[in-house]
Length: 117
Image (tube, rainbow, N blue to C red; front, side, top):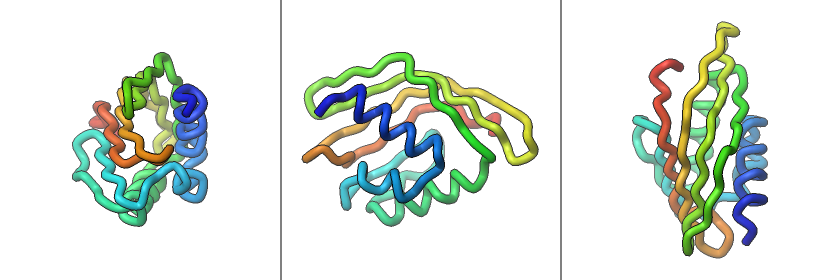
């Protein structure tokens, strides 16, 4: 697996707020944790949680500054710019750690301060 291409494609799907494009990246047993939100387990529950988050913002755009692969982990760091539903903007630095199995995400951890959203 090519880490840079995988993460670039993943965040393209996220920035498009596309559940149908996000789904193929996830293993059936995936665990998802975004910032201080509760952890979610299982592909359908994770997709539902993402849909809920996607509907809470107008848009987002991730800038990927660094991408690493260490064994079964893909790690990235960057800045995400959000456009809120009221048309105001905010940004947050983020780091994501993905645990992979058979080219699917089994553990999806996103660290960011989203308190400004």
